[in-house]
Image (cartoon, rainbow, N blue to C red; front, side, top):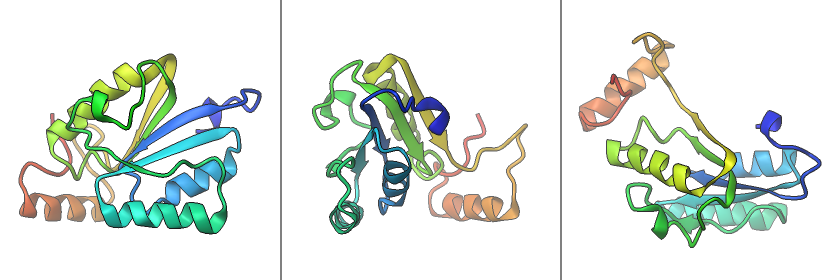
Length: 155
C-alpha cells in the first residue's frame, strides 16, 4: 500500500471490507499516519475486536467499524459517497464468501473510489489454474466441503 499512499497528501481515505479482528487496520494505520482507515465487518465479535484495538492503541486515524454487507448495494455502506475513497482494501474475503459478495465489492468500489483510486484484494489466488501452497489447497477443500459455492473461483 505504501506505493499508493503519497506522504505529502494530508489525508488518504481507505475503506477496508471484511476487516476481521482489526489487525490490518492497526498495522497500516500505524505505518501510514496520513491514512484514515475505515474498517467494516459483518461480525459483531470482529467489530468489538476492532474497537478494542482502536481504544487500547489510541489510534486517531482509524475510525470505528461499521456494519457492511458487500452483497448489498453500496448505498448501504455506512453513508459513504460516490468518488470519495482513495483506496478500497479487501483481504481474505473473496475466497470465503459467496459470489454476490465479490460482485458487490467490485460494484461498490467502482462507485466509491475516486477516479485515481485503487482497489486492493489479497487472498489465495490460483495462478494458471494452480492453487499453491498446499495449505491453501487444503483450506480451499475445507471451504468447499462446507459449502460448494465457496473457495477459490475457477472462472
